[in-house]
Image (tube, rainbow, N blue to C red):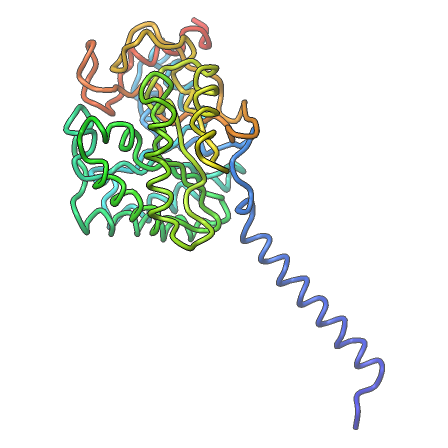
Length: 332
C-alpha cells in the first residue's frame, strides 16, 4: 500500500529536521574555524601560566604579586616545547587549553618551538632532531584538529627563518618548517611562520624566505600557511611593525600577518635580550587591517629572554621584569 499524504508529509518534515540537525552539528563543531584571526580576536588566558604560578607564590600585597596577577589575566599565547611538552603529553596539554578556551569563549593560540638546533645554539638552544621533530609536530597537529572548534592559531618556530641566513641553514630550515606545516595544517588551524621584525632583515629578503616555506609545504593543496608573525620576543613599535608587515606582504600575494605587542609599549632601544625600561603593549586583538590580521601577546611578559642584563635563564619567570613591564598599568 502506498504511503498516505500525511505519512509523506511526516517523512518530509522528519527529513528536513534531520538535515537541519546535521547542519547545526557541523556549525557547532566548526565554531569559529572558518574565520581567520582579526581585530577583536580573543585568545585563551591559561590558568596554568607562569604568571599565574608567580601570583600564588608572591607575597600578598607585593608589587610582584600585583604584576603577576595582571599578566596572568591577559590573553597570551602558550609556548609548546619538547622539553616541557614531550610527544606523549603534548596532546593532553592542548586538550586542556582547548577546554579553557571554550570556558572563556576564546581561541587556542600556541607557539610551536622545538626545531633542531633551535636559536642557533643561543639562549634558547635545544629542540628535537630528525623524525622526532616530525612526530612531535604531528602530535600537535592531531590535537589541534581535535580542538577544531577553538579555531587554533599556530605561531611556528619564532626566529627560525630570520636567523637562517646568519646560521647558514636556509635550505634545512625550509625543509623542516615545510614538513611541520604539512602535519599541522587543517581547515580550522591558522599557521603563521616567522617574519622577523622591522629592524632585522629587509622586507624582500624576509618575504623570499617565507615564500620558500609556503611553496614547499603547499604543493597543490589549497591550505598551507596563513602568513607570518613579526616582533616575537622583541620590542619594536607597533607602527613600525605595521609598516614592515605591509612591506613584506607586498612581495607575498595574499599573505597576512600577526604582530606581537606583548612588550613593545615603550618601543625598542636596539637591544633584544632583557632590555631595561620596557612596557607591555596594546592588548591582543586591538588592531588589524587588510594585511595585519591582528596583534597578540606572544612572548609572555615577565619571562626572561636569557641570562643577560641580570635575567635568569630563557623562559624563567623574572619578578622584577614583570613589575617594570606593568608599571604604567598596575597601581601601587
